[in-house]
Amino acid sequence: MHTALAFILSLVLVSHAQSQTIEPGFQLIVRPAAGLADSEFSTFRDRLELQTIADFGGIAAPFDAKVIASVHCDQEDVYEFRIVSDEPVVFTIDDARFSSDVHATKPMSVRIPLATGTHRIVIEKRETGGEAKLSVEWKSTQQTEFRTLDSTSLRAEWVSPRVLVFSKTAGFRHDSIPEGIEMLRNIANRRRMELVATEDSAFFTDENLKNLDAVIFLNTTGDVLDKQQEAAFETFIRHGGGYIGIHSASDTEYDWPFYADLVGAYFNSHPAIQDADVIVREPRHVTTMHLPSKWRRRDEWYDFRAAPKLHVNRILELDEATYQGGKMNGDHPVAWWHLFHGSRAIYCAMGHTKESYAEPAFIEFIERSVLWSCRRIDSAPSGK
Image (cartoon, rainbow, N blue to C red; front, side, top):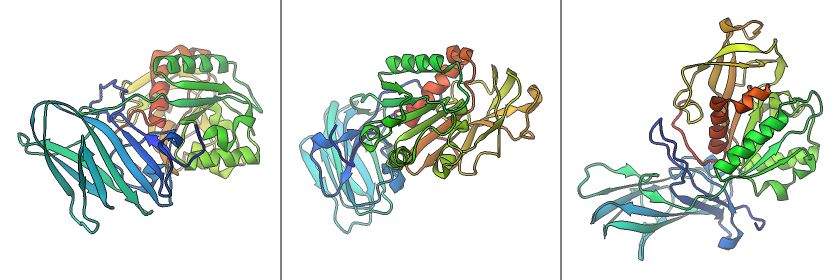
């Protein structure tokens, strides 16, 4: 990949709680308004329906956006596309090109006859900074309501997520780290990810991190990055790179305020390893859709120095009445997510034992967390 503040984004919109689909629905290209050659794009993903500048990875400067996809028509008909944007838009389908008025205040509407089959669409818009809004809906003459373009109608190539697993320790070292890496390698093979595992903090440079979709802190402990490496990681997060923290990722970098906000809470103590009930607080989030409402499992249950910061969304909590030694006074989350400077960040306090990394429900939770953080699957959660 060439150096560039540019991204190719795409995503699956999960329409049913039971959906296991991971194929993306479209590609969205975002680049600085100064312009770059298509060959200079690095890969990244986000949603088609955009609401804020953070959805573009936190790029605040003016930039261009281009949606490239193929829409599939089930029957020959006249189709209407409705595009809502805060900037002028150029819409192309096959060889037909339509442009919105520079001063238009209403949604752009395009009516065009289309044959049964697949048709290529391109949507181009110029952004001037601030909030970026773009949504696309369509319907045939046989339909009374518009529907959002999603994975049921769009086709695009799968772009392999690129993920770094970082497991450096400068304190206690978990003997389950090899099992965790092996689990993540298996996920990568199954989901066609490109995965690199390292304990070399020198990997944290702008040049290396810009080519990644997400970084996993797997049972890291202590001060594992120097100031220059921290700055590179901050840049990665601010440009929309994903973060997944597992277990003692919260026992890491206590003197780094940015990381404190990213991980959400710091480790304090834990009782003996034992069984406990994990309660699914947010069952609609894509990471928890496969779990029962009460998940009985064995692990080392972390207490935190303080409850997770208010900007995070709790998805899993411990029932302290079901085990001995909990110190969070009944307010005990063990997994949460948040959108942080354009990043999709998720932390899971579970994963101490070797057995965790062979547990099907836990494996799927981590798998879904990685795909969500890499923006390969989406969710419809309530909250922040």
